[in-house]
Image (cartoon, rainbow, N blue to C red; front, side, top):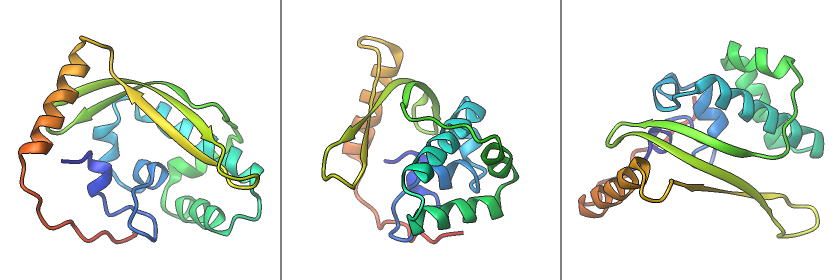
Length: 156
């Protein structure tokens, strides 16, 4: 039981989901992210900050080139030169199995080495709220479904 991003063919070369790849080339992202425009702008601003921090990161440059080729929306947002370092707020999602979720998120840098930057994003629902109930329902659905063969992911 995954969000559509995890079932999208827009994964990285290792088959891992990627917010930026999902946001732009995959049209289903418009249905999943209720405030698509805000999320897309944040994704690009975070990529721009990372590109400034690691200008020689070849996979990052390739991702930016790929998204620039595939998406007019990405090109427009990239041209704005917005930079975002902190990443926190509220995300509203339309999950296909449980409906609308409103989650508060906070990203933190994990100190793994002097050069590497790893970011962990934590998502929580308001205790006792509708989204918490829907997350519990989603967990229950995932626990009761039998595992099936994982889809083969290919990059677009």
